[in-house]
Length: 180
Image (cartoon, one colour):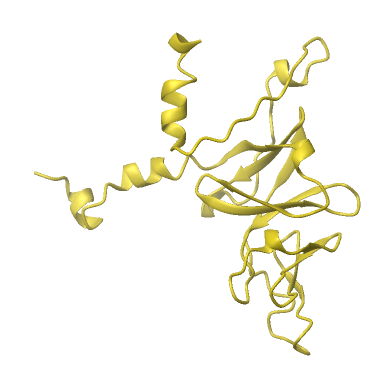
């Protein structure tokens, strides 16, 4: 017999679905700092497609990797400093997800609208961290790293690997203390 929550969700286990997309309301390291340059780059983390780029001051910005006009990937576009431009029609979106300019349409109703999800981004210990908050926790909590990553008395290095699997498998099979 299945539980009422499984039946109500059309046969899908809502807890499994929640775990599969990752644990929200935490900061996650998503890329090494050196990987994010002036050209926009596309990444997928926690099942979400994201574009990263640096503005004219070197600050990292992160948005949903989707143009609000036709859904093209913003990561294939251009860095205009404080915003990225879609390669398809040139729609310009700032680091907060607001459309700043639609070059082909005068007085376009998209201009001034927040149409793309933005992610709070910070750099520490050679990595770019993003806040993956849910609807109730859009404001990022303070990023608190362990002393071993920020203390002067510790040496550190950043190691990165992309695995084509759910994060749970990586935790179970690599981060398990018995495998250390």
